[in-house]
Length: 47
Image 1 (cartoon, one colour):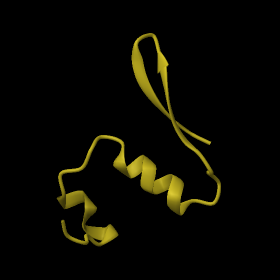
Image 2: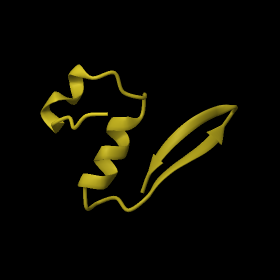
Image 3: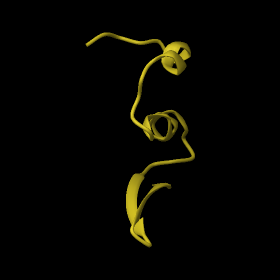
């Protein structure tokens, strides 16, 4: 495990929705990160 600066995240192999999760943590507009299933597909909801 190693610390990665935010500016370097584009150079790291991340899970598909990692940047959405970071967005929720960094943006005061959001307070919730949730998965829902719609038509058999997992959807990320940011609230």
